[in-house]
Image (cartoon, rainbow, N blue to C red; front, side, top):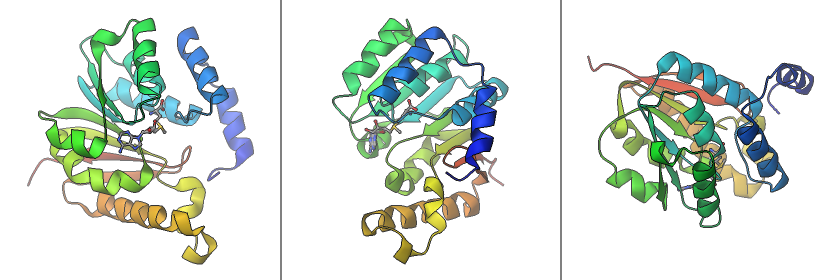
Length: 216
Ligand SMILES: C[S@@+](CC[C@H](N)C(=O)[O-])C[C@H]1O[C@@H](n2cnc3c(N)ncnc32)[C@H](O)[C@@H]1O
């Protein structure tokens, strides 16, 4: 945990929750060990979406559709969300959840590996939420940048990996070393890419917000 646990507990204790459907979906996801966005990230997204009012959202990493449906609650009827998931077991559950919530018309679920799907996508999105395999963010970035419209916002979740990305490589399990290295490369790129203006925020498991600048 990158923020003091008692502080997080306190902040989350003030949270008013979501719709009964989303609250139940969150409870079920926790019971089934499906990773979904934390309360702090939920709150953050709600505010950001209300301010930015996107019309076209792209999400990378649907899981069972919790964050997709949460984003649909905080955007207008005229906002369409495209979301990508590759894990076959989660895809039918997400589809069913979109149907139960009556949001199928506003959500398109694309099945398969984001690396392939992103290459095929056309048009531009005004909000992109990156929440898939952390070691792949750096590889998704060129396509994500192509798909993000000027003035569009890119939010990436879990970028600080419970604080482990700043540990010495010797203090980190071998299998995680590559992921952390790639995440550090990703953060460096977000901060140094001339097309982006990025802030790294230590909430939840670490998040970034990047805005795509006008070309000079
Ligand atoms: C943290 S979960 C997403 C949680 C979801 N955004 C939420 O908060 O409700 C990450 C998901 O990304 C999917 N994923 C990981 N790598 C992917 C890839 N390369 N292409 C598509 N989906 C991927 C995983 O199968 C997993 O279900």
